[in-house]
Each structure stands twice: as C-alpha cells, then as structure tokens.
Amino acid sequence: MVTNTSGKKKTAVARATITEGNGRVRVNAQPVELADPELARLKMLEPFRLADDDLRDEVDVDVDVEGGGVMGQADAARTAIARGLVQHTNDAELRDAYMEFDRSLLVNDVRQSEPKKWGGPGARARYQKSYR
Image 1 (cartoon, rainbow, N blue to C red):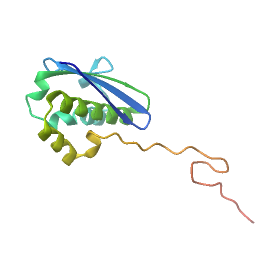
Image 2: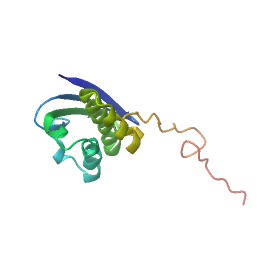
Image 3: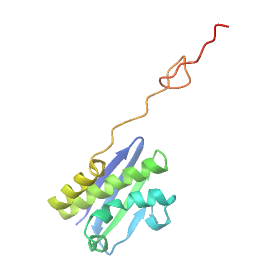
Image 4: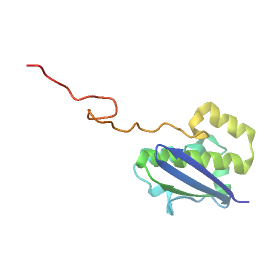
C-alpha cells in the first residue's frame, strides 16, 4: 500500500510517500541521517519517536521538500511524515497521541510572513524622524 501526504510551513511544501519497507527514511533523495543541522533532523524524526518502536522498521518514507528555509522545510517534512503514518496505519490512538503532543504534527501552520510596505524598513515598523 502506498500513501501520499503533504505538509506546509511558511513557504516550504513537503510531499511524503509512505510504502511498506524496512525503515528507510529519505529527504530529497538523501538519507535523513545526513540532514543538517541536527535540530532539523531531530524535528523531522519526531513522528517516529512518538509512534511504536517497530513502526519505523515496517515503512519506507520518501519526502520531497521545496521552498522556505531549513527549519521551515523540517517542519513541513515533519507534518507530512506524521500525516502519512496516521493514514498508512489507520490508527486512531497514534492520531490522538500526535494531537496531544503537538497539533502542528497533523495540521499545517498557515501563518505567513507579512509583506513589507512603503514608508518603513519592515512590515509594521516605520522610519524614525527627528525634529532637531
């Protein structure tokens, strides 16, 4: 059985394919163990830490991520993997465990950065003025 899911964070989009296998996790066609920085790698593997120990050995996960920065991509991949595992196993307990731990494991974070406007250095800040 093959399960396709996706996850988003900021401008990063991750698409995960989960198949029966022997525990291989690949992100952009590279083993997840090679992902840097370490914090991003740990974030991507979080769904496996909350699931059963033998679940990782039963499935192969292939994630394609594009857009955004390193941590945005890690969050998007994390959401895609968690959604895929829940869909693949069809396990309500796993879904509840993910929701209790962190809702963003299964639900996309829809927040986007606000565009910069004229009259200031950023989205909200304005240029300072001096009268003397």
